[in-house]
Length: 287
Ligand code: 13P
Image 1 (cartoon, helix red, strand yellow):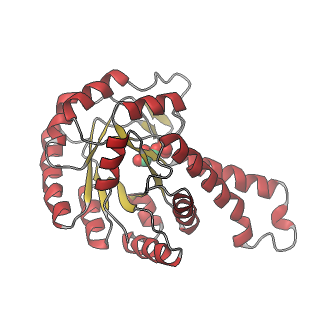
Image 2: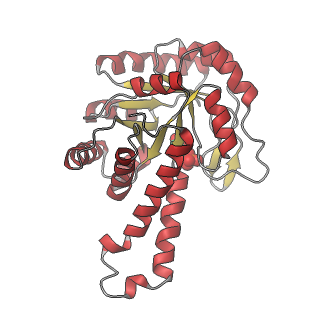
């Protein structure tokens, strides 16, 4: 059964480790992440962007697939199904579809509007026993070929949003989605430290987990990060393994074109990436 992410992240914050949010795109992704979490006895959060939800034909399909898979595979570790960077309407759709957690990304609104909308969602998610992530300070990334540098959130705004009754908070600390450019300045630990001092026990979320060096990840966890989002890195390892299979001509040998064979190396590559991350984040054995 799906659970909200509140308890697993409170435990992570108290135990000084982080739980990974791994974004899913299809059946192979979901199976690879769920089985790795079970093998490593780790809690896990499955992230679904609105785009990925649409790709999988809708949030109800996603809920059906994840619930079915957990039962058929006997997954007993805590699993949260979480909307990633939701719009207000997207959040409502996920509540209705049966997600166990949502992120409302109001970071592009003026802070007053972000606060208002977040407050409404606090009420709704509480009624449904779901967890809610809010965001302050936008997280950069590539848009139309231009890489925007991540903003640093205002710690006082973080405190204001943290006090609304949300369960965990994403704050920009110079992190960006996708690959980091060569001239990236690194995470702003000064900002993170100031945010954590003001927000206390609130689990903090680090987006853009792909490509952040291990020492920075560990320092971020020391400073209160309890959830780390990883998406691009699984896509890159899936693509590299699939490319290798095809370049070696394996799809042309025997029944190598069978999708169950063709997608197997990419599936194994996702499993290896998720395992590596869970070991770095310290969530292994924490289910
Ligand atoms: P990456 O794609 O950089 O790993 O970021 C994932 C993320 O933050 C999803 O919200």
